[in-house]
Amino acid sequence: QKEVEQNSGPLSVPEGAIASLNCTYSDRVSQSFFWYRQYSGKSPELIMSIYSNGDKEDGRFTAQLNKASQYVSLLIRDSQPSDSATYLCAVNGAKTDKLIFGTGTRLQVFP
Amino acid sequence: DAEITQSPRHKITETGRQVTLACHQTWNHNNMFWYRQDLGHGLRLIHYSYGVQDTNKGEVSDGYSVSRSNTEDLPLTLESAASSQTSVYFCASSESLGENTEAFFGQGTRLTVV
Image (tube, rainbow over all chains, first blue to last red):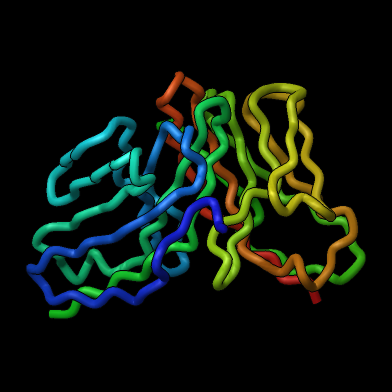
């Protein structure tokens, strides 16, 4: 079992819709969770971090964490074509600062 | 503004040659990481460092080495380049502040081994 798993997609949503991206992780003691956005040919860019159970909202983005289910998600409201990118989920453990990444989900937002 | 820079941005080398990729950060972060990114594999951790003189192996460390002589730099060396090491390499850094370990990435180095 991979440490961090994501559906590779592509996930296609129409402009203005909500995009829902999901991620599961295997290390039960993981404490920090991150979502990165990566445009083609560019480096990953941090868009959200979440550390405790529940929801965290930042503009059109909402991160959701459920440690009991070992599940973290990212919702993008009012999706725009400029949101089309690969979204990477990253996790680190309780006693380590190293980030482990999922393989990413490619999101396509069509007009 | 603080930043993290990688050089070169593109490199073509021959099989068997030693290659060093540079990573320099001005965030004054303790933690530095090297990842490689390949289609279908996502970002895989090669080596990482929690501070000066500290280095650790990641999941794909064979054929690579790093050294940390100061806070700002973590060069990645390919001892004898192989075609399997053709990839895009990313350096990242983060500050260890308990749970706050957000990492920031350099622009990447595209390495081709021929």
